[in-house]
Image (cartoon, rainbow, N blue to C red):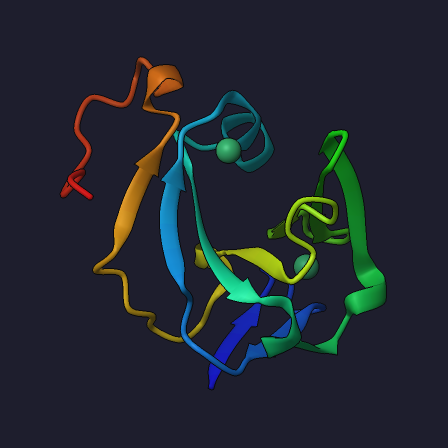
Length: 127
Ligand SMILES: [Zn+2]
Ligand SMILES: [Zn+2]
């Protein structure tokens, strides 16, 4: 069982299975939203994710018409990236919110074309 939480611990959740896919997303929206060079998300089956506390504290933001991002309304931690239209059965969870280790051997880099110019070294950037 994978455990996760936001920075202030208002939002806590568990995930029943390992991710099917993990990626560093270098798109501009992830950079802005995370205040970081890139966002690392792991894709899980939505039915495997169970909120223990704070689901009602999550604020939602449509960064694109069909992309819904969710973050803690108290501390701002990014939690979910979801695409209800195209893949309603899947959800991407911000890996930094996880308190348990996950298998990250299948790490991919997405949207490297918009990679932050100030990100000079990317350790282990191969997929
Ligand atoms: Zn929080
Ligand atoms: Zn992105």
